[in-house]
Length: 188
Image (cartoon, rainbow, N blue to C red; front, side):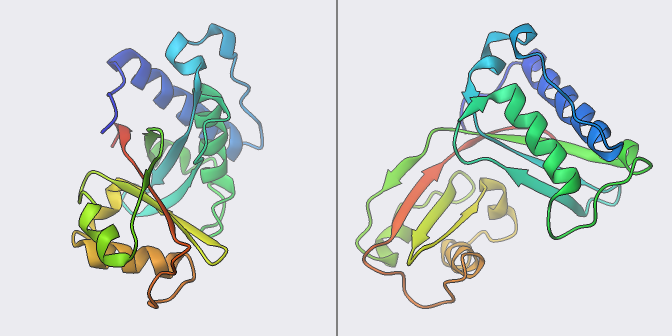
């Protein structure tokens, strides 16, 4: 895990995300006054925003892998995208907004993993801790550390990530690039 956000900054990010979801569902766009936000939220950051229905089922999840804009803006943009543009779901409606649970995963900087083959990669993974990005043969996929909850074994975790990238179950190539990261989780 990266250093957790203090309670005030975590609550502020959740408020931004909730307001961005509300605005998006109403056909509006939330504009974050970055200059008025706490210093930590003005720094470049990358985050994923996850929406869950009242029954706990996934309703949308969109995020950024690179810190290219202030964290407060990144959270707002990804919350709106999770509500409207996750291709797995229909757009969130205004009547759904009050029932949605919102959570945020703020990513740490990426750390390259040097691995000559899949066995070496698997040996370096820290189940329950690492998020993982793989790039191979022109394809890329990412799993947040939360995915370990559904796939606790490193082999199953990597195989599912390869499938997500469209690489099938064939061994990864010598050109594989892998990076790990941790997250600070905010919300449920």
